[in-house]
Length: 194
Image (cartoon, rainbow, N blue to C red; front, top):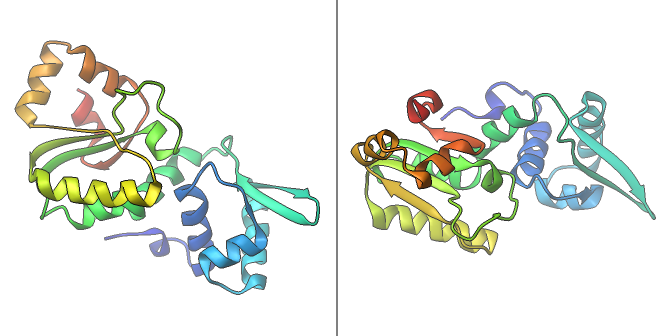
């Protein structure tokens, strides 16, 4: 499986991008980052400075600490979010276990789920899985992510035939899912939506 280290040569920078985009709502101070990525403090400081200069992260001194967090106005914010969602956490687990899951044609994360924002409604779907799926295997992977995040994950599974039927009928439930922002983990977005 391809990952960020294929295109970014700095091991520390890859870990920083995965940390920040894997937890997009978090703020970190330097020592906290060092603990998370398990790298030398000088290397972390150097790459934090490079990411800040590039406009990917912001920093702000508070008391005797300097805090860093992602800039959502960075032009490639969505792109990095998508890449990291596929290479870490549940996205990477689903891709790695694709064969065990059966024959998934599409796996889509909602934009809110990827950004780790609260759902607007209780019935809002975090993950849509389309294909011939081994449900117990998927449930096991999702439960592991739920315990890691300490929150429930709402997911929906449907066959390709059901997806096509619901699209033809302009099913409000499916249209609500497809109308929102999304990150495709498996499959092509255009094929899913059209």
